[in-house]
Image 1 (spheres, helix red, strand yellow):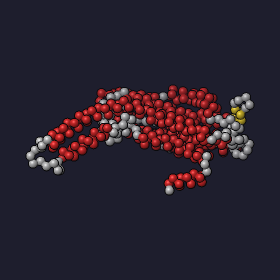
Image 2 (cartoon, rainbow, N blue to C red):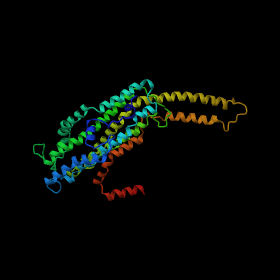
Image 3 (cartoon, one colour):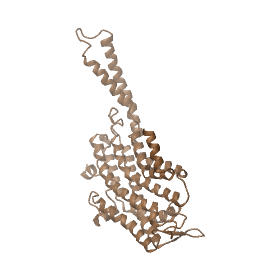
Image 4 (tube, rainbow, N blue to C red):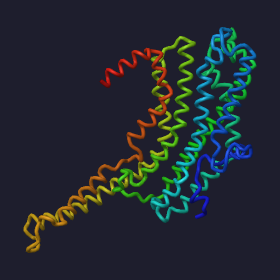
Length: 394
């Protein structure tokens, strides 16, 4: 197997934008210079909006209903979500780099399936580096994201620093609004949708892996046949989930403060969005369910047969008076062996049919909703909240 296929698998280390960022000296070969990328990209997307809003008299004050400095959504998008998406590149790269090695070092791929596994890695590399994919993403951003999604889901229907609503529908953009709609929003959406593409590359790779013959060990202490490392890898997507939580929180905050909505009005969004994101991130691991279920069934049968033979011999030896003369029961290794057989069978019985546990689900869900936590203060004062927390704790 070539060194590239074995040692250097990453869903983020490649593609035209990656090469462009490297040539601009905003990244190293392994996505270093994170702070520089955050500073340049955030200032490119956010600073012109501030300057144009100041020039147009819409940065603060009562000139419009929503001045720039009081727009929660725009600050959450460019000063929180965007840095998180950039940080996520380095985190995911470092966590997922050894994935291929883990499959090989743990001997999880049967020998006859190694060529198919290598082909899966090579296909993932080609798709990740696709120029066509990123061109299509850019076209989607402008034709769908900017012209359809943003006006209907993000833009407010009140006078803002970026636009004034027209009587016949639509928006009259300010100079800051033109930069916002046609530069800042597309740049952000391209980076966001590029993450969806990377998740697709990851899912496609795992789907190809599940078509290989896997050699799982039902007694593995990770309770996932040896695939438990995949759940640790998936946690690397936490910054991406938190970025989505920041977008949701900013959008809800604007509608609460400027359109008269209340936090309970968004119960569906606060449930559906985290559930959807968890399915996107953890869903690809469900492709291993058939392999894990088969390994568990096989393990229960085989270890059940082994346990049956051992307990039968133990019963005949110690309960049917067939032990060798003079061999004492106290201190016999047979007792410990009996316990070891029971422990092995219990490990198989506790084996999960999914390569992640409840803790991973709760951890990712909390991380997703964390940026929305301050919105509770729109319903209850901080003093009252602290009082209730103290009552619970004390």
